[in-house]
Image (cartoon, rainbow over all chains, first blue to last red):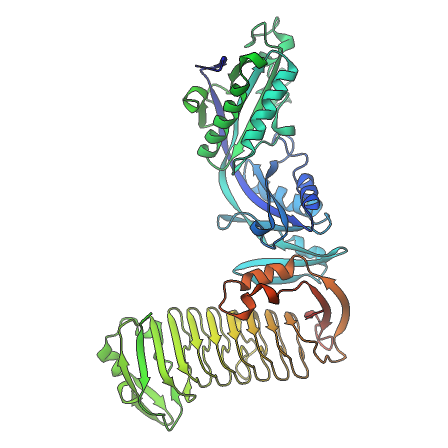
Length: 298
Length: 271
């Protein structure tokens, strides 16, 4: 398959089941909501070492937030319930509670509930106040900026992590431009995040390593500087490979994201140095979700 | 919506316990069976069809037409459906109510919404003492649900209230929120003396400055940018003045008390 001179490789992205939740942060200004959200989603690129994968889903206007203030919705993903619960509580306490004027709400009704303010309330040292409003329990914790409002729990849903595609380009600048275009397009969609810096992975990995203690290591087949010494997937005219990793609530969410992302990449075309779109997989052994690039782009 | 209408033939001489005429209790009964229900009135029993003309067929939507203030226990332990009271209601309206809605278009007697667990009670007129309170000797009053009072409330409104919301568009007499354990009471009008007497936790949200006892500590002025908007937004679906945007505010003066007891309650006064 070839779109606008860009070769769409006959391969698939391999994804795996995760657990996810959505939380909503509000604050007195868009800036402070974004600050709290950025802090909560910091150091959350990969479950390999961060505990969870998290990123901002979208900004919310006041009419779409529970308390009518400016807000940001965040998606957090982890491999299991226990890990996700720990990350939600830890990040709520260390990143949002500490952020001036912030409040924290669940972005998912129903689902299995994860504690959010349930234990955080004890920060109030006995001065915390519970309020049951429209069937949801909130905690009002007195803090130095006034009052921190946090919903008692947030809903957890089954999700899919690791949807991806790789942009193979002639130069770094051209690869970055294509990746930026793809990320910008995908960010318009709901229910998906791209947890890596700027939505882009500059150092994609393979499973395993020559060092027994490392679970993953460099994806040498896509490293331009190793073309001559490894079983490379790269032709001579490719000097840079960037990967877009997508986590979403459902397979359909990831399919939609991959389609618009690859579409934005291909729109730049061969004349802008984009040579090929590929995807990362592990021979179908890692995860049950397979996203075939050519099927998605039909 | 047309419902099962109980039209009062003539005012009863004694008080009548109409609790058997509740949607969940008569859901599967025929009109003949409903007519044959015996209601306790004073020391006697009276058949439903002696007291009312019964018409209509929707047993989940009951209408008391020409209702009397001698009708006690309307909607007692009600679980679902709707009751409309066209006229006054007696004591214990919605006692231990667990679901559904009651709309009282006139005044109600003492202990309305007493120990209510869930559902919605809408009172267009005034109500007497102990709205949302507990029965004498019991430890917990209202434990959930919402009460909207368009008129004025009597004394001891929300006495021993444990959870839920009482919204009063009018005034409330003395001891508003007395011995309150938790929950929210909002009053647009004035409140009488001894507001929050013995309250342990819970929130009294007042539009008018009350006369507070010395056992309430002034915690100063605050702008509640998140909690009050969240609370007011929850009112917007209600058929009440509380649903209107112009009544909302964020700036309050906060008092904590009653410090003669636990002292974790709060009185938020619009400022």
